Image 1 (cartoon, rainbow, N blue to C red):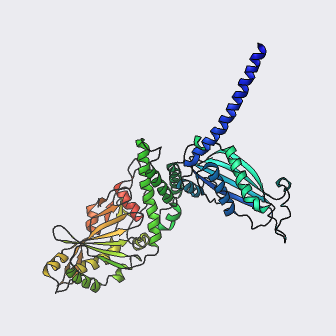
Image 2 (cartoon, rainbow, N blue to C red):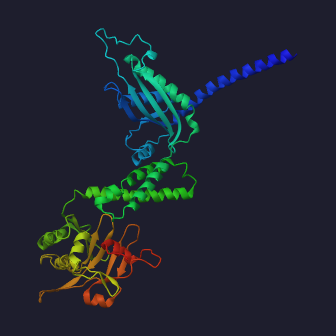
Image 3 (tube, helix red, strand yellow):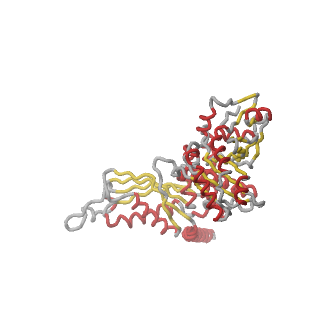
Length: 489
């Protein structure tokens, strides 16, 4: 009876092993088959040769590796081009991984020992009759690391060697050995999470914020490309995540708000870089926008523009385009908005030594540097020819004018231009504004009015209060400090 029990036990054991072995094989095949919905990528980080050869290159090895992975897993495979001097976590690599939505990354170092042998006159290489194991000095060795693309965590490694000769068999040998090595090391890709472009967008956004904070100098078009370099990459990945409906965002109000907020900021800062690059090719010109003014009346305004000879005056302020925009208001009156590029260095040169920085504990803002242009605009307002229609001439003489000092980065400052001409006395009296409108990135437009009326009446200077509150937060007046680059203490 005891022998019968032992026999039964052995049959059960062998049966279990048999079933387990079959199940494992079938399970592995099934798991690999299900990897077809994953996006995989190959990256050749280093390729080294013991002797010079033109027979093998990065492009060839990458192509063969992609074929091997596609054959092994049935998945889509792309190429990730590495900078060998940069780590995998470099911003450039993070952007590629996120943009390609890579779920699994096969990063490889390839070392080639020896080279393909040149065939003899009969077309046969010396070693074609030798077995691969005898080719100890002619082989390519591949050392790979498999990363999960969701978080760039290494999940396994693989290695294999491929004989270089016979050369006709190299491709098939490489494909078979690659497939065998990766399937053994990575039998079930689906146990690892799929890539989330938002993860990489967040990494690039955080990196960009940190880099921006590390630079103490004010943001300018000269340093914007380097300072804000990766916001455009973060923007692209946030947009991919938004369209895809990232699993980390769906159903999470806080995460959804963060994505929207960061996408908005990345878009804004990417546009700064784009605008600065486009602006490099722009030169001085006068642009005129008549909006809804009828063509017959435009003729008279154009004549007045030509007679006013604005160009010499405007070139003192900027080397970039200047725009005159005429607008007919609902009440029938005309408004003129002049968009002029603000040059902080020129403003400083005009005021230093002439205008005190502070007076009676007030920061002083003087518009004296723009006197010549304001004077020209007031004269222009009364310059329509005698043949102009009476209604147009009357509206033009009472035209409201605004000078908009614009920047590409720091918003704009605008103020009214007004005054009167006593024709019989040949005298022009300027009506300086006692307030200025400031528009800064991230803030609504604010009207800042002079704090001291006596100083304004005497000097026509706009007096500003403190740039910060007791708690250290920026005041509305502080926005003017930022625009004109006044020291904030």
